[in-house]
Image 1 (cartoon, rainbow, N blue to C red):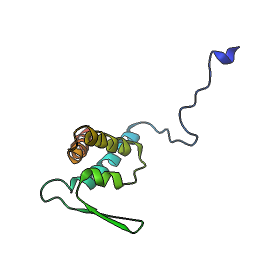
Image 2: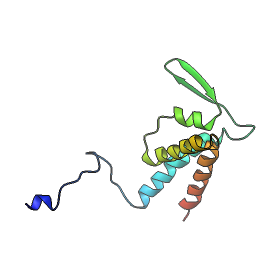
Image 3: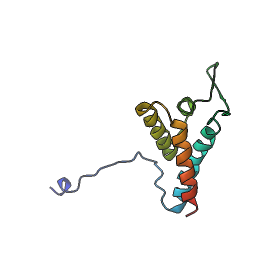
Image 4: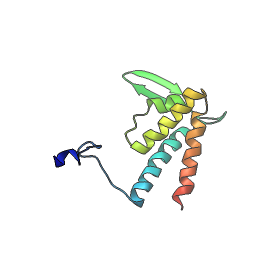
Length: 113
């Protein structure tokens, strides 16, 4: 009968990293800043193009949303940042690069605290 009072709930997959503390926060900030650094150079009238080659297909773009869609991101914090940018794209249709660059700069300032 006691098994009904405290059921076991497993939220994370086995082998999931559960690190905590300041080191993990810095790691999350660094991952998001890496995404911001990639996308930042596409911003503005003198924005640089990015070249993607996948399965023999070549894609050249300076659109932040397209760049982020073509990145294979595995870090959870960086993936959350990309999801925020994709939400911006679906809601407004523009501003994905600005969202990522702004978030990257805010995190850069937060890192100093």
